[in-house]
Length: 276
Picture (cartoon, one colour):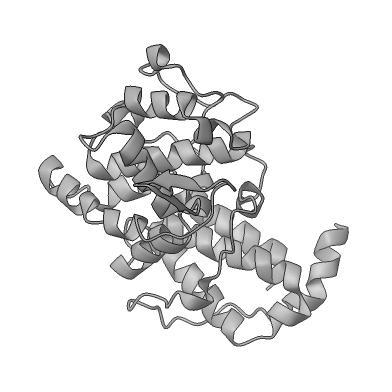
């Protein structure tokens, strides 16, 4: 199966809004990659396919196993926060849909149970150490969350608190623009899991600028120059925030036995895809 055919298949799955198909195709691709030597023979194709598999798992979050959700939040939340499947269908909505069958109280209870996974994440965000409880900690996701609690308070964070933190904290402001937006998305996710983000804000992922506290309430819709380009591939949406490695992510127990996608043709077809 050519890389271009894999991309086309994934686009169709997303257009049809079929999380079950996304999960099944991700599992087929993962099994096929384990049966080939594509990592050494076509490293660029291997990297893109790995990212596409990851994107499929994120899209399948509403119906995927708890293990998949745990690993997305614990290992690769920064990549997941950068994915936008169009029509506002990004990580916040995927998690919200996962518990749609519950009452609001039940949904929030389940969402809050995901916080420990997020607080184990050791992806790096920035370069400066974070002063937390009289010690300097590396700028890892889990430490940024502790720092956010320390600076914004432990009693729950409103949109105002979040905007104030991002716009006034010197360490947050020292981040490059893209990483600052990632930090803001991370804080939004943390607040969302805690149940303190207003419903009209839970689907936000990025925005054109950090609002001042006085402007925290209006809808934060990304500008055209900040929003992901609809023509960008899902792999292109991810920047170098860490390695997306699903080889350590066991497929969920509900694996399909309908066959695999044969990637053996990919190595020789990669060059022709690039030429086209």
